[in-house]
Structure formats: structure tokens, C-alpha cells
Image (cartoon, helix red, strand yellow):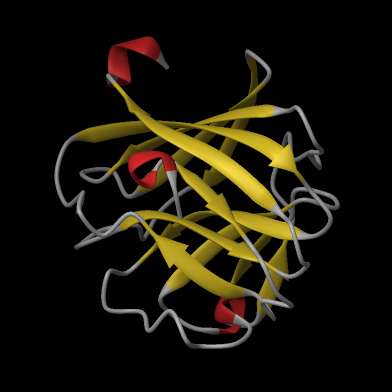
Length: 151
């Protein structure tokens, strides 16, 4: 992690270990993040519980991580893949905006300015933080918090 915590880069085979923005725990109201894919081979972008151990291989198989897969946009959570209306994969150069509504328990997604839809329709309540899970060496993303009004 570099650039004051805004750039995450995998320097080894990460085996889908997770990196989280734990300094910004979200648990009420709306929160928004912009994630720019700097270099993508195979990753998941979403949210996780701040208690999730970053040393956990294959974090998407845990109850504490919800991530959209770069290949096709499917949502991975607790070892299960599920499709959602509007899902799309993403690649190097794409910009995702995520809107977490902690009160409604939802996660809404935009890609390159176009609304894709609601990836998670319920259940995202309690303490959460932005999270990325990478597989391959040199996968990297840049993340920044935004005012939800900018979504």
C-alpha cells in the first residue's frame, strides 16, 4: 500500500487475500468510493468486515467479504457466486463507483459513469469497510472516498 493508503498493489501471488480500508469503518448512512483499476489480472472489489484477517487466503469464501469479480462482475460472498442485474466485468483503466447504503444494506455500482445496478440488495449492515482481493502479482487499484452526493 502506498500513496498515503490510496494505492494497493499485489507484489506476490496474493491468493485472493484481502486489503481493507480499516481506517474508515462504515455502519450507518451512505458511503461512496471510487476505485480505479490500475492493472488487472484477477481481482474482486467490494466491502468486508474490518475483523477479516488479511492473511486469509481466498477471502471471497468467507462470510466477511462481498466482492465483484473482475472477470464477469459476479458477486462472491461466503464461497458462493451469484449474478445480479447489470453485472459486468472490469479491466485495466476502468473506474468503479460503489455506493454503500448501510441503513438499507445495499451496494450500488457504476462503471465508467454508467449505472450498472444494485449488486447487493440486502444484508450489508454492521461494520464494513472498502475491500479489494487480488490474485495475481502486480494487480493494483487506486481507491478514494467520495461524498455520496457525487455517486
